[in-house]
Amino acid sequence: MLIGVMSDSHDYLPGIKRAVEVFTSEKTDFVIHCGDFISPFTAKFFKGLNCPLSGVYGNNDGDKYALREKFSFLKAEIHGQPHVFTVEGRKLMVLHGFRSPETTRDIAYGLAKTEKYDVVLYGHTHSFDAGKVNKTLVLNPGETCGYLTNEETIALLDLETLSFKKINL
Image 1: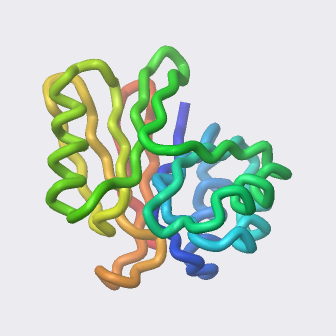
Image 2: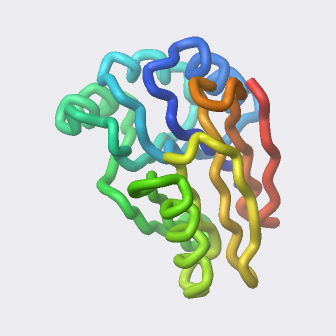
Image 3: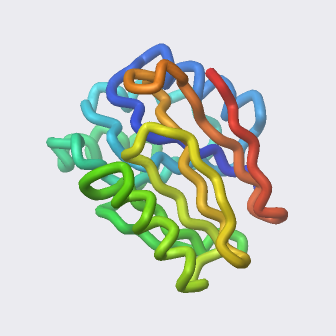
């Protein structure tokens, strides 16, 4: 199963459109957004996805009710963080983040150390990061918006092999 992973889109429509194009052309089976969608109006730019979308709210997502409502036509699910679920027998933990980038990264790697999850996905730091703690993959797709790093990135995750590919938009 191929999963598209994105985070911190921050209303940046060109990045959202390119991410959707990549996920569609790569035939992803599922897309996970690690938070900070921001405005509910962005939902219509995810319309081209040919797979389910799941995500978590970020610290800048203000109107959670409207976000959930606008994304409902996609059968998308947006959850509070952290969100734990199982896909294809793999247990995933998805969070946006808390406080500083360093704190968020420490939390993600701390969760991986528990060995309760196959994959820990996180956002908030706006920087791409990938690592392994024992058998747990930790992955931050970076920022779809490119506002802080000038690098618009997403990731493709092969759930069977727990391998990933960084995609520069």
